[in-house]
Length: 221
Image (cartoon, rainbow, N blue to C red):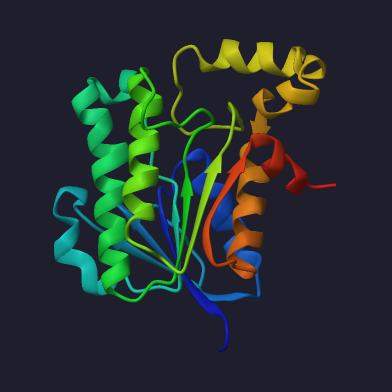
């Protein structure tokens, strides 16, 4: 076996479930680790599930060794119930994962962030996303890829209030998003996952940012 080992966080989510499918199919990866709060029931010989307490992630660090980390963790303030709980998932959990993976020798870290992420933003959500990008960048992975998709399209296991209407609107008006507005067009979660996989198979040194219009180039033909 000469392929890489991947570690996926957020494998039950929209993008996480898509990257998991692609990793299972990819000959570039021999082993896939999933960290989750509870079993996902993945039945594949390449996959091992590691059940963790994200509040005590440092206690599991020795089991988090991998060549590439795919961080698809994320929630919404509405789902989390408060800004504090949102930040715990989208900042603290992501950062603790990155630190643990770094100590175990991971060379590549791929983060799903958000279009508009900016540590100086007045918007709490976008500011938090920008802050976690900066925090992980400071860990100096050999390759750190940040994906900033627009609204994600796909079938979530959990329903997010308001998203259904938003998706219908974005799909109906997608033709309007051209030129400078192209990056705001809604994007399929599968396309984001395809971008992640290609970046993992062909890593480039340093920090790379892919906004939604660039991610869209990986859309399945």
